[in-house]
Length: 111
Image 1 (cartoon, rainbow, N blue to C red):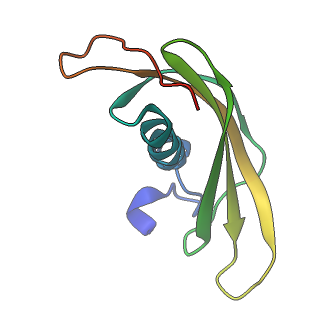
Image 2: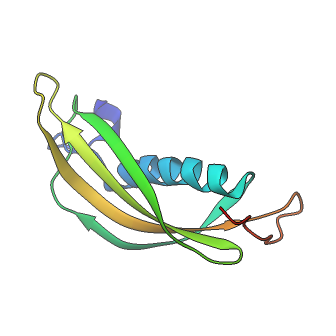
């Protein structure tokens, strides 16, 4: 939407990173079978801009699981409103830690 964009009609990078964090968080919570929190975001690359009106899709995949943490590779793609073609716009790696009800790290169950 226009409120999420700069004067040139490009969506703010922070808005897109928030969307990617949410997508990666869903994957982390499902794998952890409970709450997981973002502790790091690495290797953010903005490949192309997202324009107002574009459809944005986020894809996330677990690439590493430690005792309490998970690394999730996350890519965002844009599709112009009247097109079938998607193009990669942003990539990042998110690290999540599974936490208990008190916010303390807990083990991630084996898959």
